Image (cartoon, rainbow, N blue to C red; front, side, top):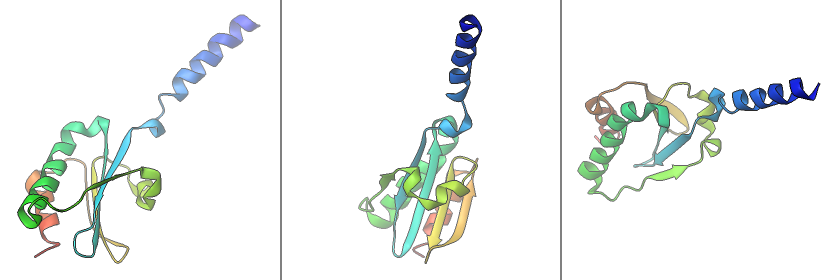
Length: 120
C-alpha cells in the first residue's frame, strides 16, 4: 500500500507546484498627477514586458526629469490583480475607475502614448 501511496503523493505535490496560480507576478505602480498607474508582469512575459518597462522609463524621464517614483507592490495588495488574466498588463485609473488598459504584446510607442496622455 505504501509503495502506491508515496509515489501518488509525490506526483500530486509536483503537479500542485506547477499550477498557473504559482506565477511570479510583480506589480509596479506610480501615481502621476491624480492618476494611479499599475503594471502587472510575470517572468513568462519578460520579452513582452520590455516595451512596457521602457515606456515607463521614457515617460518618467521626458515628463518628470527622472523624479517620478515607481513602487514595487505585492499583487495581493492591489485589488485589481484578480482582473488581470494576461501579462504584461498596464492599467490606468482615475478616481478609482479604469480609464485605460493595455494587455499582452504592445509596442513601446503605444504604451508611451497612453502614459503621455495623462499629462497632456
